[in-house]
Each structure stands twice: as structure tokens, then as C-alpha cells.
Image 1: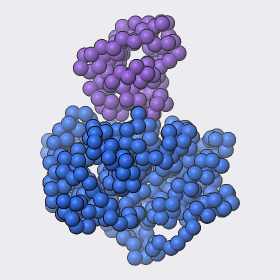
Image 2: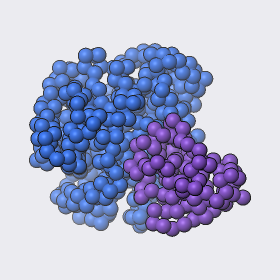
Image 3: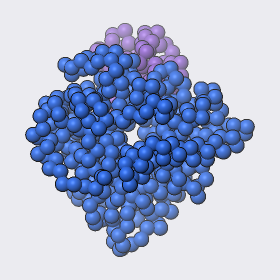
Image 4: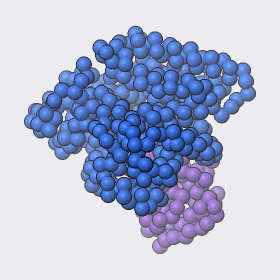
Amino acid sequence: MPQVTYIEHSGTEHRIELEAGKSVMQGAIDNGIPGIDADCGGECACATCHVYVDEAWLAKCGTAGEQEASMLSFAATAEPNSRLSCQITMSPELDGLVVRMPEAQH
Amino acid sequence: MNAPVDLDHARIAATTPLDRLDPSNPAIFRDDAWQPYFARLRREAPVHYTAESMFGPFWSVSTYKEIMQCELAHKVLSSDSLHGGITIRDRDKSLRLPMFIAMDPPQHDEQRKVVQPIVAPANLAKLEHMIRERAISILEGLPRNETFNWVDRVSIELTVSMLATLFDFPQEERRKLSHWSDCATALPMPGGLIENEEQREAVFAEMLGAFMKLWNERVNAEPRPDLISMLAHGEATRNMTPREFMGNLILLIVGGNDTTRNSISGGVLFLNENPAEYDKLRANPALIETMVPEIIRYQTPLAHMRRTATADFEIGGKTIRAGDKVIMWYISGNRDEAAIDQPDRFIIDRPRPRGHLSFGFGIHRCVGNRLAELQLKILWEEILKRFPKIEVVGPAERTYSAFVHGITNLPVRIPG
């Protein structure tokens, strides 16, 4: 199964296996990984599952859609490599993906 | 005028023909009798049309999933004050107030971004100490073994002092902020807080005068981290018309005032109504963390947000036509059992308690949501350190409004 590594703002790493087709947000929630809130449950409507995608994976993750970009523009600490993890769907090509969490999800 | 008359709400909700059911009647909120109306709508017509009401014709969206769908449809469901804005009540076109909550992109996004930094994580951390000091001083000043109104002594006091800090508004005049907030949302009626729109406009003019003074002081000074300085220096806001400045002030004042105030009052009431939950909290104060969002869900301090369709829109098997008014009833979606387990119960240790609709979702989601939570969290931490019990000793009185779901009087007594 493809693997994802989540790195908390403090530096703590969590590596999990995530079934293709599930979102990177869901992987964090199902595994109780702190630092991803996901208030809206994956509707791209709250920007509390914000992550920074490791440079090496940016292109493979694709770019944010219009709604996602709008929501991200209100996040306090958005960077060019910011994404909402509910909008990144796991696939074999993303095996090994590394994402980092911001200081806070608001 | 709005003196309670005995309405048999359960019977009215059950027997009124569906097409004549009107969930916007402010009396049903004042009487705390909204539940059966919305339970019926969720069951029989999640998207429902009321042809006649004191606010004219409107659609009600009452289920969680359909409300979320509306929140994401901002391209066809407009918030713009030109179409009627974000509350059920239409105002005369000449009195409409532009404010960023009542704008669509791109202007909404540009103006919202100017004030967003006030609630950035680093700024919240700075505010925490100040909120705690205020909370302690308010709580230490409360009487013992004596009945008093919790709303006035605590809920209003804490929220206005917070708001005065955010604006860097004179603390000694902080009660003006709650007065302006109340006037902004009051329904005009004889003997009411405001009797007509002229009175409301006069209050707004007084408010604008006070804030213009602050604006003029700050526009020529170095930028500072208060809301007025941020607006005066922000690229998207520094050239606002006076009317636009007025609108945004009202937005920030109501948004930072009425909402948290009513959640602070609601929490005391809910714990009294649910003594087992109060016991759980006393035994484990760490539950404040999950209790706070549960209070905000259970109170739902703003009962609805309104949109206006700018094109035909299909939802829940109905077709909403361009020009129609659409009401997203957050208060109902927060009690939708399809989305929330045992939604009519107040449970302070729910897993993932932030899935509620009280802050809205999508691009208009409440800017201050984490600040609101922070105020409630700190207040409850300090309450539990001091008072084992705050007893509600009389019936709560509620706001006559279909928008602000408020508590105006909550008689309590602190034993000791």
C-alpha cells in the first residue's frame, strides 16, 4: 500500500500506509495524527486540513482548484506549496509523499 | 409588541399545512420553540418554500448536507448587499450597507484578507493573556448567594472588553459597542430598542463619528495591529466610502459581540439543564476543549445566513429561481441526525466536535471562529477554578429575532 509521511510543526513524523483513493486528510484523521483538524469533513469548505507539500511531490500532487485556492487564500500561513489535504487523493504515484503541517489550522 | 403570548407551538408546527409553515416567525425563537418546526421541515421538506411571511417569500434549507451544498455554491448564491445581503430581512435599497460578509468575490476576498491577520495564530497567542486577566477580574467581581443576570455581568462584559481591545477603542466606553451591536440587529417595533429605521441610522451615524475619530488618528500614524489601523492602512479598505466603513464596523462589532455573548450564556444554561454533563466537566476540566465547540453547536448563536440566487439552482429536488431568497438554517442543520449523532443532546465530550455549522462553511466562514473558542475556553477554565456551581435560578429570556439566537436574561446564583 502507498505510504505518506506527515511531519508535525514540532518536527514529529508519522508514517502511515494509505489506500489509493483515500484523501491525505482522511489518512491523518483515521490514524489520529495531530495537526490536521478537518472541521468540514472533506468538503473543501474550511481550510483546516492545510499542509505544505514537500517540493519533490508538488507536481505529482497537481495544483489547487478554484475553490481550494479561495479557501487557502484565507489561511494564516499559506505558502506557494500549500494544499488542502482533503483535496489530495492517494495514488500509487504518490507512494512516499511527504507533507508538513502548519503552526496552527486557523 | 413582543410580549410572550401563549402560542401552542407543538400543535402549530404539527398541524399547519406544509406550504404555509413559516419558520421565520421571531416568536418561535423568543419562545424557544423552534425545534418542532425545523424537525418537521427536515423530515418532510429539507428545501421548503414559504410564500408569505413578515420577511416576504423565502426558501428554507434545513438539512446539514443541503446547507453545505449552498455554502459551496457562492457563484450562484450571492451574499451581496445589492441583492439583499446575508439576513432574512430586506432593508430599503437606500439603507443597504456594504460590508465584506455581504460581498461576493473578488471584493469580499480582498477586504476579508485585510482583517484576517487579527486572528492569526501568533496574534491569538498574544491575546490569550489579556483575555484571561479580563475574565479573572470579571469573575472575581461577581456577587455570592445573590441572584444576578449572567448575560449582563459576564457575557456582555467579556465580549465588549475583548472587542474594545481588538479595535483599540476606549475601554471606558466599551458598553457603547454592545449597544450599537444590539441596535444593528434589532427588529424595529414600537417600544423596542429601535422603533424605526431612522432611529437605527441615527445610531449608526453616532457610531461612525466615534470611529472616524479613531480612523483619522491612525491613518496618519504607523500601522498597528488593531482593526481600525488595519482597515485604514489596508490596500483594499483604505479608500472605503464612509458607508462601507460603517458596514464593515457593524460586521466586526456584531460578529465579535452578539455571537460569543450568546454562547457564553448558553453554556451556563446547558450545563444546568444537563447536570450529568456538569458533573463530568467538574471531574475533568480538560473536557473544556471539546465542550466549547459543543456549546457553539448547541446554541447556534446565529440561527441562519441568507443568500440570493443569481441564477436558477437545483437543490434537494427543488428548483430555486434567480432572484429567490434562500435561508440556510444553521440552527436546524446543527440538529440534523443524518450528520450529527444524537443531535438534540448536549454532550461535552463528542469526538470531532467542530463539524457544526455555527460558523458557516466555505469562503464566508467566520473569521473569528478560533478567537470565539479561545474566549469561551479561558472563561470556563477560570470559572472552574473558582465556582463549583453556577446555578440558573429562573427562566432564560430570549431575543425576538430569527437571526440572532440570543439570551437576554439568565438569572443565576453562585453559592458560597
